[in-house]
Amino acid sequence: MADLPAATSPSVVLAHPTDDEKRQTWALTAAEWAGALTLDQYLEREPYLTTIPVSRDGGMTHWILTTNDDNGSSGSSERPLLSSCESIMKTVLVASPEGDGQVTEEIGHGIGSVYTSPEFRGRSYASRMLAEVGVQLENWDLAPQEGTATKQQQQQQKKKKKAICSALWSDIGKKFYAKKGWIPFASQHIEFPAGHHHDSTAKAKGLTSTPITYDNLAGFCALDEAALRERLSRTARETGKTVMAFAPSHDQMLWHLYRDSYIASIVFPDRDPHLADDPIDNDKDNTITNTNGSTNGSTNGGRSGSSSSSSPTRQPRSGDALRRHPGKLEANEVKGIAVGKPGRRVWAFWTRNYSKGPESPKDNTLYILRLTIENEEQYDAHSEQEKQELADSLVAVIRAAQATAQEWSCGRVDLWNPDGLVARLLLRDSGLEHEVVEREESSIPSLMWYGAGTKTEDAVWLCNEKYAWC
Image (cartoon, rainbow, N blue to C red):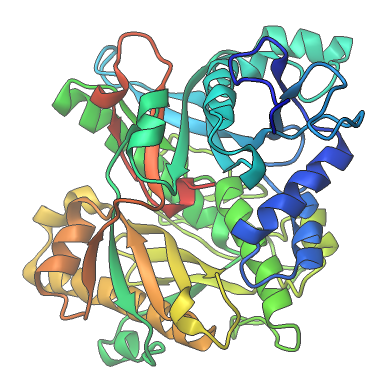
């Protein structure tokens, strides 16, 4: 240990790991993050996660702090892995009070898997790495991605722009990363116990419910993002502040859901996924039908600036990623639920987290990635009957999540940072058993703002929910 360099030494550098070094870092981090997976299963999962939406095609970058010489701590020619982390490039929607709240698409980065091996701890290596990563990420979209850029890539990079922010989710409290420039934001969640509710609540109230699957997910994401753009613009005008949110895009949800399906197929190797009752018709025209009778092609569930209400119908399969998936993945696997009438629906997507195996449900959690009330801003104009239907729809969505948690050996359901109408309806008189939790140590959303004219602590972060996490 005596021959280890100081964190401030010029011989300590930020670098990208080789494939062998990536595998070494994964072997080290397995004890922290493998959860219910064995080491071998974890070592298979990690490279798979680089091939899914958002991560693939250079979206994920691996970083290590190492030395620029051959003198590793063991005296071998191998570089020491002093600290490591990953970053994922994400789309951030930003509205500024200037320009009448116009919403722009910016680049943001999520940072995860920050790790220092026990023998290297206490020497400020993680601090040195993060200080450099924070600076690098501001311009990372302009840089070659873990290798030498081709001439074509270099030309493309000239058209790209700087990042607007980076974010991480601290598992070591609020102070460490705040000192590095990542300011903690709201870290509250509502916790619901798992339960045997199924869809009885929706049926009892005469409400229409629709399973959300890989097939129809894109349509819901497009509606959600269009409404969020309007909310960002409105909030910027009302507050006079810069307002941001990570885009709740189709790809962003697929990143979580592919990960979820992969892990569940390993944790439950002999069990089929939960499928929607409606069989898939691959020959059916895959469009979104609007309430005015027109149709929009929906091959990718892309971003939309329109706020017109539409009814998501079956979407095409999401391409080769589904067919290549090593787990049991079906395009009509249920990943959430929508309840209520078009225009006044409530929907949610969810993912399961297995810290332990199915024999220990108290250690496992079903997270609601995103919970949406359609046309939320019109709530005050609804009749009392319509308001009650909306409240009943919200309860039905939560009960469906509780039933799914029970079915898949998760002891609870967590909903991160509900705001606006969702919080009012859930906390006021939903009748649901729940606990409000203020997290002080784990999964603390923390933001570093690169944009000019705004301090990080002055930015307004909307939809600070689990889907943004990485």
